[in-house]
Amino acid sequence: MLLPYIKKVSSELAFQIQRCYNFEMKKIILASMVLVAVGWSSVALAECPQAYPLFRIERSKNKHIVQYDICVSENGDVSSPEPVRVYWLLENGRRRDLNFIQAMLAYGIDSQEKLGENRYRMALVALKERKIVVEKSPAGYRAIALISGEESILEKAYVKSEERFLGLPKVIYVDLFGRNLRTDVPVTERIIP
Image (tube, rainbow, N blue to C red; front, side):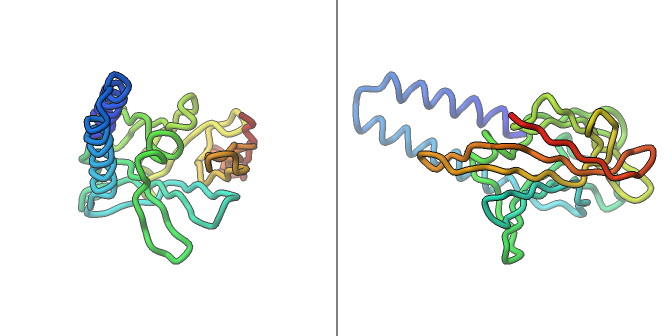
């Protein structure tokens, strides 16, 4: 959707800032980057007729949750080429869009590819190598990923991190939680970056 365009515009603007020697021009370019980021956040949570929760990310930093849902039409089928939506669920129950940096570097969706009717493959920005297949099931929609080497229904991830200089966290580990697709037995896996 907009993600490839935003990445391209951001990298072009960053290049222009490096080449620019005029302070006023730098201010204009920086303001443009802010407008792109604000525009990104306003479309990230576009309304959809019906959404099914897929999985969430909990964090050691606070109780805010990153939630991933699939947006479907009123008949329950996927109509969008990029149907998975991601947003914050705050401690007080309110929703908020990811900001530009969170979407591009941490919790955003890197790619979504249609595999068939009501079936998609997606990759998260932070775990590009760990593909997730989203598919329709009799109970709704589910996210399927390899957890401990077994195809499993991904329910949640937990990110343990420590604050570092400049406020950028260092990830200590990521725990994945789900249920084995064949046996329905709970499964977990710890990923250490």
